[in-house]
Image (cartoon, rainbow, N blue to C red; front, side, top):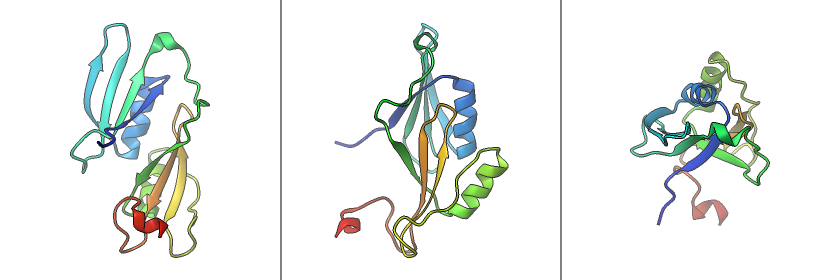
Length: 137
Protein backbone atom coordinates (compact mmCIF):
# COMPACT_ATOMS: atom_id res chain seq x y z
CA UNK A 1 0.00 0.00 0.00
CA UNK A 2 0.99 3.64 -0.34
CA UNK A 3 -0.56 7.02 0.28
CA UNK A 4 -1.98 8.50 -2.91
CA UNK A 5 -2.53 12.14 -1.91
CA UNK A 6 -3.88 14.48 0.74
CA UNK A 7 -7.29 16.06 0.14
CA UNK A 8 -8.31 19.47 1.49
CA UNK A 9 -11.80 20.92 1.41
CA UNK A 10 -11.58 24.60 0.40
CA UNK A 11 -14.01 27.52 0.64
CA UNK A 12 -12.95 29.54 -2.43
CA UNK A 13 -11.53 27.31 -5.15
CA UNK A 14 -10.04 30.08 -7.30
CA UNK A 15 -8.29 31.70 -4.31
CA UNK A 16 -6.93 28.32 -3.20
CA UNK A 17 -5.77 27.43 -6.72
CA UNK A 18 -3.88 30.75 -6.91
CA UNK A 19 -2.26 30.07 -3.52
CA UNK A 20 -1.15 26.54 -4.42
CA UNK A 21 0.05 27.66 -7.88
CA UNK A 22 2.23 30.28 -6.15
CA UNK A 23 3.57 27.48 -3.94
CA UNK A 24 4.56 25.63 -7.12
CA UNK A 25 1.74 23.11 -7.68
CA UNK A 26 0.35 22.52 -11.16
CA UNK A 27 -3.08 21.17 -12.05
CA UNK A 28 -3.14 17.55 -13.14
CA UNK A 29 -6.89 17.37 -13.69
CA UNK A 30 -10.34 18.49 -12.55
CA UNK A 31 -13.60 16.63 -11.93
CA UNK A 32 -16.92 18.48 -11.96
CA UNK A 33 -19.31 16.40 -9.86
CA UNK A 34 -22.39 18.05 -11.37
CA UNK A 35 -23.77 19.62 -8.19
CA UNK A 36 -21.54 22.70 -8.27
CA UNK A 37 -18.74 20.83 -6.55
CA UNK A 38 -15.32 20.35 -8.14
CA UNK A 39 -12.29 18.25 -7.32
CA UNK A 40 -8.95 19.60 -8.54
CA UNK A 41 -5.94 17.26 -8.52
CA UNK A 42 -2.51 18.90 -8.15
CA UNK A 43 1.13 17.86 -8.23
CA UNK A 44 4.55 19.46 -8.24
CA UNK A 45 6.19 19.63 -11.69
CA UNK A 46 8.87 17.06 -10.73
CA UNK A 47 6.37 14.56 -9.33
CA UNK A 48 5.13 11.73 -11.55
CA UNK A 49 1.73 11.54 -9.78
CA UNK A 50 -0.85 13.56 -7.88
CA UNK A 51 0.01 14.68 -4.35
CA UNK A 52 -2.83 17.07 -3.38
CA UNK A 53 -6.56 17.31 -4.07
CA UNK A 54 -8.62 20.44 -3.48
CA UNK A 55 -12.31 19.72 -2.86
CA UNK A 56 -14.75 22.59 -3.39
CA UNK A 57 -18.31 21.95 -2.19
CA UNK A 58 -20.10 25.33 -2.15
CA UNK A 59 -23.28 23.84 -0.65
CA UNK A 60 -21.22 22.70 2.36
CA UNK A 61 -20.52 26.28 3.46
CA UNK A 62 -17.33 27.64 4.97
CA UNK A 63 -14.56 25.18 5.83
CA UNK A 64 -13.84 24.51 9.51
CA UNK A 65 -10.17 23.55 9.77
CA UNK A 66 -10.34 22.61 13.46
CA UNK A 67 -11.13 18.96 12.80
CA UNK A 68 -7.87 17.43 14.05
CA UNK A 69 -5.78 17.90 10.91
CA UNK A 70 -2.41 19.41 11.81
CA UNK A 71 -0.36 20.22 8.71
CA UNK A 72 1.04 19.27 5.31
CA UNK A 73 4.84 18.95 5.06
CA UNK A 74 6.52 19.82 1.76
CA UNK A 75 10.18 19.15 0.99
CA UNK A 76 12.03 21.98 -0.78
CA UNK A 77 15.53 22.03 -2.28
CA UNK A 78 16.54 25.52 -1.09
CA UNK A 79 14.41 27.05 1.66
CA UNK A 80 15.80 30.61 1.38
CA UNK A 81 15.10 30.75 -2.37
CA UNK A 82 11.64 29.21 -1.85
CA UNK A 83 10.76 31.79 0.82
CA UNK A 84 11.90 34.62 -1.43
CA UNK A 85 9.80 33.30 -4.34
CA UNK A 86 6.73 32.87 -2.11
CA UNK A 87 7.11 36.36 -0.65
CA UNK A 88 7.46 37.80 -4.16
CA UNK A 89 4.21 35.99 -5.05
CA UNK A 90 2.42 37.76 -2.19
CA UNK A 91 2.40 34.86 0.29
CA UNK A 92 3.57 35.25 3.88
CA UNK A 93 5.90 32.44 4.97
CA UNK A 94 7.20 32.50 8.54
CA UNK A 95 10.83 32.79 9.64
CA UNK A 96 13.34 29.98 9.19
CA UNK A 97 13.44 27.58 12.14
CA UNK A 98 15.96 24.87 13.09
CA UNK A 99 13.84 22.33 15.00
CA UNK A 100 16.64 19.72 15.06
CA UNK A 101 19.43 22.16 15.87
CA UNK A 102 22.06 23.56 13.48
CA UNK A 103 22.71 20.17 11.82
CA UNK A 104 19.03 19.32 11.34
CA UNK A 105 16.46 20.41 8.80
CA UNK A 106 15.52 24.04 8.14
CA UNK A 107 11.79 24.71 8.24
CA UNK A 108 9.32 27.52 7.69
CA UNK A 109 5.54 27.64 8.12
CA UNK A 110 2.85 29.02 5.84
CA UNK A 111 -0.95 29.10 6.10
CA UNK A 112 -3.28 28.68 3.12
CA UNK A 113 -6.46 30.76 2.54
CA UNK A 114 -8.62 28.33 4.56
CA UNK A 115 -6.20 28.14 7.50
CA UNK A 116 -4.41 24.87 6.63
CA UNK A 117 -0.85 24.93 7.93
CA UNK A 118 2.03 23.99 5.63
CA UNK A 119 5.54 23.13 6.79
CA UNK A 120 8.32 23.72 4.26
CA UNK A 121 11.36 21.50 4.94
CA UNK A 122 14.92 21.68 3.59
CA UNK A 123 16.96 18.63 4.62
CA UNK A 124 20.63 19.05 5.53
CA UNK A 125 23.21 18.07 2.87
CA UNK A 126 23.44 14.30 2.44
CA UNK A 127 20.05 13.56 3.99
CA UNK A 128 17.83 11.29 1.86
CA UNK A 129 14.51 12.59 0.56
CA UNK A 130 11.77 12.27 3.16
CA UNK A 131 11.82 10.93 6.69
CA UNK A 132 13.29 7.45 7.02
CA UNK A 133 13.87 5.00 9.87
CA UNK A 134 17.43 6.39 10.10
CA UNK A 135 15.98 9.65 11.44
CA UNK A 136 14.86 7.78 14.57
CA UNK A 137 17.91 5.65 15.34
